[in-house]
Picture: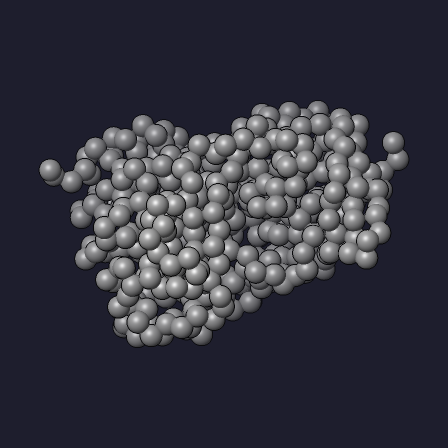
Length: 410
């Protein structure tokens, strides 16, 4: 088979842009195809400090730093009258102690532009309609907006299509995630927050006063704007208005602290609803392809892990694929899937612990030991692959032990 390119990357979001850039820098021919046109709206706006390492690796960090995004130096949590916060510069793991809250339309555009500036071929308005995998190369049928079709042959393909999950759908790779069905309703606001104690340098996660399986995010942006959303199981939304805007407002008004904080807020866009977002696959790789980020697995938005996992997968996959294209033997399971899954499983333990109450008890403990708080802070900062951290290396066992110590007196 003759090849039109070495690597086909499906999707120009963060994972696709970073993976394509790393492979292009290594000397490989790369073509990125993206169904949509940028800028386009996307949710997942609160980055984690671990992201900064991958942006730096791809030569994109300087452009992100110069973009004027809202600084994020930690995470604040609220539950009724209880308040706590974590500062990322006080974490256990080495590495960046800050990051940014980003409007994804502009952030994703910056990364795609940076990929193109470094020489990557990126094409928008192209849909991948059929895909033939193979150990000796892959074949993709692409449809352009004008209706014309193109068959592209590549030595390898990376699916970075996010929630579009192109290859899992085409190749029947999807499987249930194991998480209960939840929904998110969200919008951008001119937030009108006049509370002098509100810290715009931190994401605010608020637990519903009556239902601990329901929570809100408030992600500040510059110029008094914010992303606000509510996440909960289907039964929480059933008594609320069907209209998304009215639903979100009713949910906010149902929490005393948020109702007061957002009393002067007005929406900048119609509210959106997303359900059934938790996803998994039977395998993260196959003959001639690998899945990056949300195309492979998405857990839950509660700890903003989505972009971090996506960029980690891009960095890992680019390194393995560079070696493979250079003629070295590689093992995609041992070199890509298992190392990636290590961090995903760490996040999964704490997401599960959040919803069953174990991790909430830890987060809201009134007097946590400083060394343990620093280790937990590392996970909230995205350093879920740092096996020097006992709460990463033995995540489930350590969480259970800590939750027992932090359990409220009955």
